[in-house]
Image (cartoon, rainbow, N blue to C red; front, side):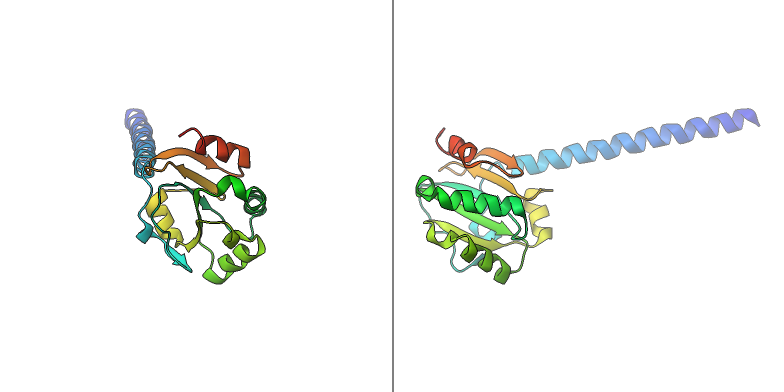
Length: 169
């Protein structure tokens, strides 16, 4: 009886180890998949643009995932607007899961539409997950003029850091 109990416990431990190892492996592979996928700028058709779609040009692109109620996102918007001359030759894609009306109100509040090459879009949370994987808010991707990922920032990021990766191209 003791041998059977010992065998059962060992079997349960081995099963748990295999399960957690496989689960960890799946998470690592998923992260690797999304890391590979975001190396290239997503297609313009991926997003539901508010107003008008981005126009093709030879500028670098910054994708800023934000939520209008996020204080860090508000800081980011204000800082970029205050340094708009630095972003004159940059595509700024402001993407949110919020409703279009709320996104537009945010853009008006921080005068984002006064920045050249600034575009607003809505993207459903499920589509964000499918295209970018799990992201935090704010989350920033910087792509060069050839649409290759240069840097990814998670969380609030100073304008100087953004400019550093724009000017290293």
